[in-house]
Length: 437
Image (tube, one colour):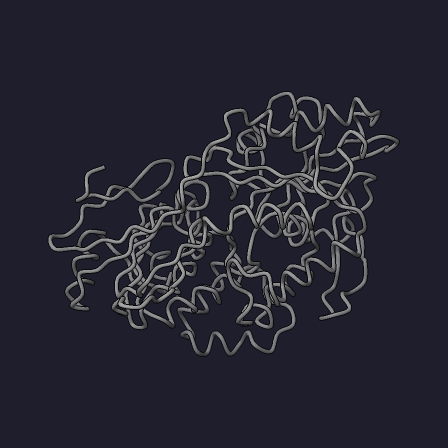
């Protein structure tokens, strides 16, 4: 791509943006990580030489049942690389095939079924031989009640299929998360297979408005601390954690005790994901990371929040998201309707007294963090006119025109571009001699 054009992740491909004349771009990307030449071999090595636990082979010996959690379709986890090898090790150790369950950790998202489930699992053998099921957070009878956390009183309800299995393994992708610090590990368990009251407590304003509940931060993060307490309440849980690059290829994998193996993956990726930027910008252009994260407007909000540290107050954040599947859940649509009706201040006031958030209204609350700081413009090809209205952000008909107008409005040609969206976390780190925006 020439220097006068920049590709943003968009749907299953790229959106090419031509730079306005006089634009001075700063492109914010993760450091390039070497791809694993033998991903399958790396998986096997991790399973044989785990972190803070016996090998999977030893863990499976003498067990009668196993449950493997996988992330839902919103995360591009390379499940096809590791599910069958893990299951075959369990079988060789004596766990009956009928007693192995692969459970999709949907949280409060919709189930993944049909062709979408085939894409998610990525291995026909697994689908043909193993029970693959979805978690349903609103099915009360499907959850085991483990009481409440001692620290903040969060109700602990976990899917029985996972909580009661002899061998429990969470699998996932370690990437920045704008509230839990980092995805993967303990987050695949809670909220991944948690009861709706657990999830809605996590999504209440008590957690959402905490200044430490932000991307790439685990220290003092109240959500992370609650997740750790839930894991300890459950007992022995293990995790396989993956890290991928912009092309969705595997660059790192860890396996072992869920907390220790997750932290090892975080240590690996944090230095290349958090990118120091020596100034703030009055114009920031980003994406929703392309497919599958930009399937809905609901997920798009992650891309609005992640770059806020480098957006100058009063600046313009322009985000490109295909929204190929539309808006999101009916509950999220209702929250956005209320935002459009009440306005941001009155909407936020309705949240602060709740101990349980309404389903999916937390994402609307997160959007307010972006719109409080500056102007948000959305370029999309996938929403109806009514859906565009209730986004409550400015709609861009032409991303080049939006960039040009922002430069003129702010009188500043410097523009930050974040092609991979929320998979990259830019952090404002001023240095001597730099000009702050």
